Picture 1 (cartoon, one colour):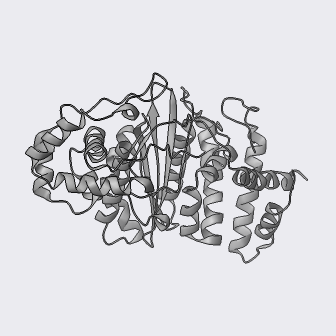
Picture 2: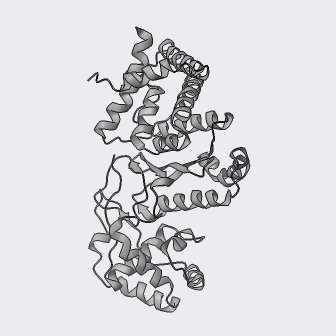
Picture 3: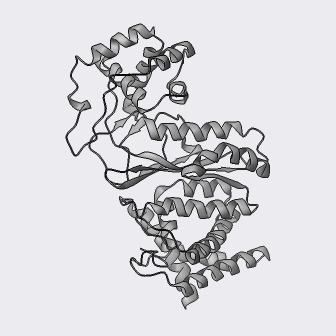
Length: 378
């Protein structure tokens, strides 16, 4: 009976979390996952990745990874902390190892800190494995989405983790995370290529983390469209005129640009890099993405252009925080209970057996797992 109970619980954990769409906070936890748990996570991840990709394809796998609640529940199944910021770094690290070591049609680049800066080199090297002819496209995507989440959503979170997954068909997903040191909280951003019609207009598959702030400068909100257009017009003006506009903007009402102690305090852009503004003028950008991608453009420049847009041209930016948003084997920190190694290994064995049987033409066990997922145990 135990062999049935484990996949039964695993399957329902995914459905349970997905149906209820809770808000999940990501406090910063210290310490490291013990090696024995990492090894078990890799073993189970390997079997789960095999089943999903072989049954539904690489696009379906990327779609799941780019869903913040599916990702979170996957971390629960693997026995990691349900609400720790480390679930992002550890789970993506495990998936990276598993997928890059296998021939499943997906490559993974990036990681935490220094590893995130190696993404271009990793994409160039790994793209050969899945037959990608133009890896530069994905290097550009990686850089652009990192700049967007670090600069265009100003919630006090600074990116420190970035991973991009690419399949052989050219689909991609990004999972990246920022840290707010004042709140001691992290925020995770999910992207999926199939759902990105514009990189700067509601592009995310989901953003997860607490606290959700009352006021966050959100330049990727739909309501910021006119402001984005005005910013393009501004940088196409003579830099001397832009300097005058910035100076004039500080004589206007700034109430909602400066907040109380519990909200984010923005450093007003009094001393812009005017050489950068001149370089943008020479670029003559035709769309907002070109400004975002330009080397040297950071949160301060984005903020200044948005301020001028609102005060001078009457096109305000959005101040809406985009963040939206139990265990099968226990959790690393012993919550709600310590990881049961025997049960964990038993679950791995069940999935391994199901995959081996499927390779031999027997799909009964995989079909049974699917049927269990449709039962209601709550």
